[in-house]
Length: 159
Image 1 (cartoon, helix red, strand yellow):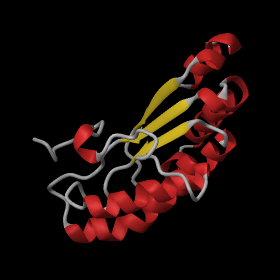
Image 2 (spheres, helix red, strand yellow; image 1 turned 90 degrees about the vertical axis):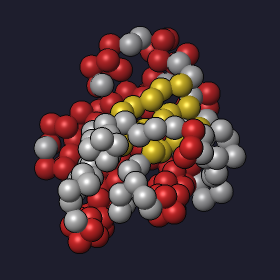
Image 3 (cartoon, helix red, strand yellow; image 1 turned 135 degrees about the horizontal axis):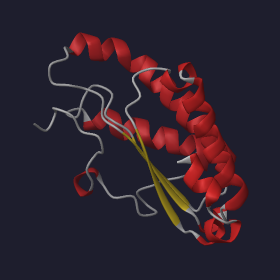
């Protein structure tokens, strides 16, 4: 992703109005542990911050689903605080450089699996508001409701 963004001319990236970034599943503070991935994510956001025309730019970030139906609820409940912390520290903090975006849509896997949409509907707006401000409502500015999109990287949840 970084190489692609870095090789785009400032003119091209400045005129781009929409970009969707697909991230692999985040199980815990994995990007920080894999330092190269963490640096590339930060560098990608820095390229966007310096070249994109933020007031006309809509950014969508989708994080892949990580749960298997074979995993027990206890494992999911135990992992959820680490995963939510990873969303904030690995994904959202670097996005703070992009304050001034026209729109930001974050799609994160539901904390306790796909069946708990209520929890996901609490997590996504909170993360979006960390970047866009407390009054930001992604659905009001065009984010499709859950029935209108699918998650990337689905594993055996849909099998």
